[in-house]
Amino acid sequence: MTPTTHTNTQKAVLTVATLTSFLGPFLISSVNIALPAIEKEFALNAVSLTWIVTSYLLSSAIFLLPIGRLADLKGEVKLFKLGMVIFALATFLCGLSPTGMLLIGMRVLQGLGAAMTMTTGAPLLISAFPPSERGKVLGFNVAAVYLGLAMGPFVGGILTQHLGWRAIFLFSSVLGLFGVLFTFLKLKNIPSSKSTGKFDYTGALLYGSALLLIVYYSSHLHAATGFALLALGISLLLLFVVQCGRSAHPLFDTALFTKNRLFAFSNLAALINYSTTASIIFLMSLFLQKVKGLSPQAAGAILISQPLVMAILSPYAGKLSDRIEPRILATTGMFLNAVGLLFLAFVNQDTPQPLIVAVLLFMGFGFALFSSPNMNTIMSSVEKRQLGTASGTASTMRIVGQMISMTLVMLIFSARFHGAQIAQVQNEMFVGTAQFVYLVFAALCMVGVYFSYSRGNMHK
Image 1 (cartoon, rainbow, N blue to C red):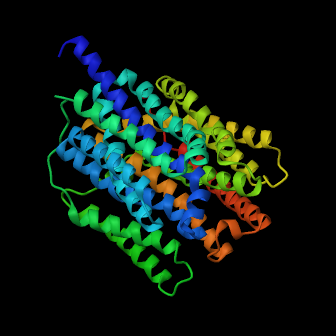
Image 2 (cartoon, rainbow, N blue to C red; image 1 turned 60 degrees about the vertical axis):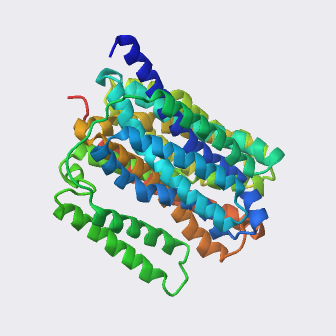
Image 3 (spheres, rainbow, N blue to C red; image 1 turned 120 degrees about the vertical axis):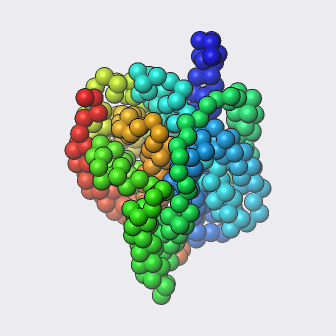
């Protein structure tokens, strides 16, 4: 391969990896801003409304680890291309959904496609670029995630207000189609790293079933079968861990958590960080439109502030982590997030909008300091043959963290609102519930600060 060809390949890989990293978060944040419109059209209650978001996250979480293992066995490129096709098709079908239940079903299919691209995107970048540029390109990849989160509320607000919520999915499907065409045209003859072994179908079934039962329980908290489902889900999760220990070719190498402190604590820090912060856009979108009375477009203009800072600063934080110990940067960022969550716990009907924007900007800075250095640590703490598994695990921590965040909100909404629609809940009750959620998240985030600081050093 000539230097020019190699450079062109690097540019192509970076383009498609950042595009897919942009699209998933863009849809998450843009759909959040459209939730009141979706609730009105389909007459969904508060718990059903959260499933519009949770179904995508749950599907992604179920498939991330199995696909990460398949990527190690079969290579990343084929799975990446197939994931692009599935994601683009499912996104288009979401825009045509005639019922809330069908929309949730298409979001599940969309989550599968997203899992395939998320898991394989980072290994493609690692393979295409030298170790000296790893932090920088991963920083661009993380920046694409945050750019998607930033553009989602703003673009989604405009589309929802002027064209309706379906326009969000139809617009995104056009971007997805472009990604499909670009991927099949440019990602040719790219070698994939493969490892030997077999796929653990038993482990995949146990893992997926456990997550499904645990999350499904959260929306059936008061049902007679609720705790039985939770107990069964936890039991299956424990069986999955046992299966990984016994299998000659486990779905997940538990030694990465038991013998690799750097990998384990970095992933735990990521899990806690996303668990405590992923619901901010969801809660603030409802707060700004319901309590403050803002239009979707105006609410989106406010919500863009946090992820926009994240998108701008993440590449610099990633590049900085190539020289400065990542745990120092990441721990500082996570501590700032905890402080920001504590500030949000005091936001109410009378809080000025500029102050809300200031808090979101503050947390955006914390996010940027945490995410790129943390991802650099995870991907640098494993051997090359484990890149697919490492990427799948890191993506799983992010998606499961987002899912845990939404599940906690779902549990609290279910307990406080008793099946009512958000629009029917009094503003004072909604604000008090959101404040309680932020306090819980702030306390949990401080636990993550411990894991982030105690992980050990990457630069040796």
